[in-house]
Length: 178
Picture 1 (cartoon, helix red, strand yellow):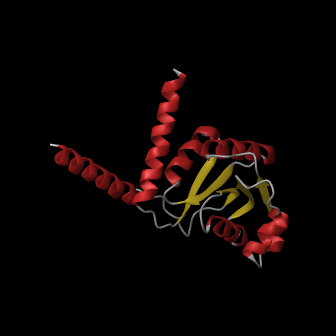
Picture 2: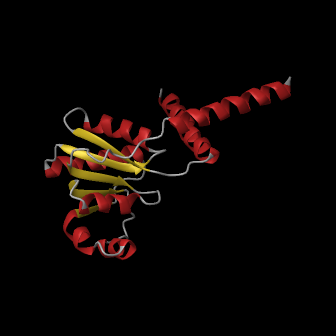
């Protein structure tokens, strides 16, 4: 009986991973309309590099790096990326107020409103895009055009497990507040 229950749980977990993999966020289409702003969420490989390419390709006018460590400077960023110092100096803002996806969206909303932008390109990893899009849509409402631009990653079973654990913790926190 225990072996059957464990097998059922393993099967459900595997099916969840397949569903997760099939619904990953996609990169923006090559012919996607440019936006006034771009927001990149820190925490994954190639996100910031892709966001700077978006600026260099004139697909956005200004970029917010949300969730940056307060000690990081534009000079640090330019050294890391290399060859992009001019565009980083003129068109990149570093946001260090946020610590999670929800606060990323809230910080971005204040930045977007301050600059009076009406369209924004959200850049994060493909496995994180669904959650980020949800939080940004909630923070921005329907007043802004939101384009998503997922950076490809190679998620594993551990990624799914981590996202599931975050989901469970959020649900438990909601129940604790009631």
